[in-house]
Length: 474
Image (cartoon, rainbow, N blue to C red; front, side, top):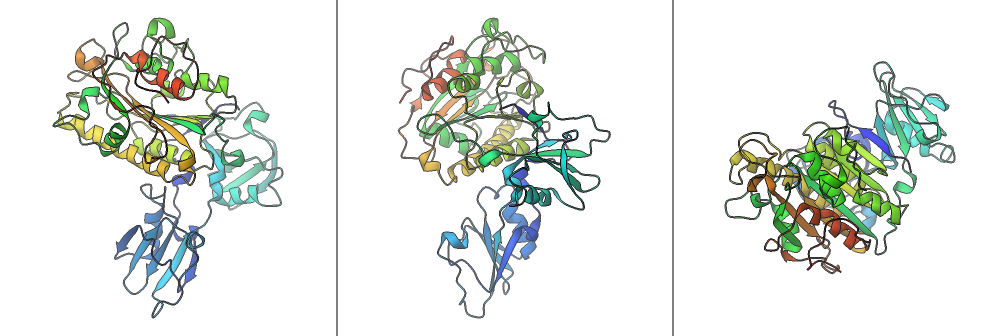
């Protein structure tokens, strides 16, 4: 599979699965409701406001219906559909309820490439349409046998359906005047099943600039999501970056991704022109399992270019420091029937470049708390997957460097301090824990962090310079 580069612009280009259109996306059943199964109650609202709330980014991972009480102007949001609970109740006294069920989103079968199109190869043109209209047309019974993609003209509200993918025609054209087009392509089967035995997956969460000693201590930022991962798995609060290389992002992330120091992996600075000379851990996965798919999302150019896996299948560049866009992208992938086998999810806001990186600094703590809230959204979406109990996800949290005062790059203790968290049983108690407890008493270098443990979890040989923690393993 050729890599797909998805770009999210500042102009609210969000992943497909987070887009909300209101009541038009719901099917109404009058004088009916689901009996029970209410997850959240909203008061003093209209049906349109309930629809908007249901589709908002904080609820889109679970909300699929709501019951609106016309008498009290309130609604109950639910993670169930009528067919999940044996049908609707229709004999309430005075019939105060209307039931709204979210329609299947035709765009869920597509991924989008902003400001790009296939040049030529148009089979059918549709006018006065939305992207959802085009997606529905492409996948209906009369066209699904041949329609593989469409280009949507945002200026004219028209689309061209095609029987070609970008890889069939040598790539996409991205230099149209005014960038009127977005390219949408069918994600075959809504993803490809993980080929790793045990239906294993990896979710690698990278938090830029996070000192390991800024978590899980008296007075430190309160981080419910990261604490849940650490308490249910294993963690190390002082994995040492730097040493033979500068404590800056390029070398730090390349070491996390390869298990080698810069003298071997070649990324000695933040230069965008430096390729990794050692394989990315996710490329090692694809070498052993060629049908494994890999997704990468991040706002730093290097993450989605010279530091990404060479075989990455889905690459999303979100807007600068816009963590919600990155989060929505991962939630979108997790909404697929078969999400990517491995995902790298990059969060940038903790790297403040301001006074100070001290664990008790209020500004630094606020950034940590903000990213923790983003991670919680992803964890909620992951745990809500219909087949989650039959999957095994190793969740890895790591950072590239710490900081001192208002910067980093040197070899002080604060600049070298990074975090490592490993958890393969988050809200999945049927899984045997890969690793448990506080590992901090055992010295670990950054080469010993993410990559050796990912390889071990996946059952792959480790030929890197790093070594896993002795207490980890299945």
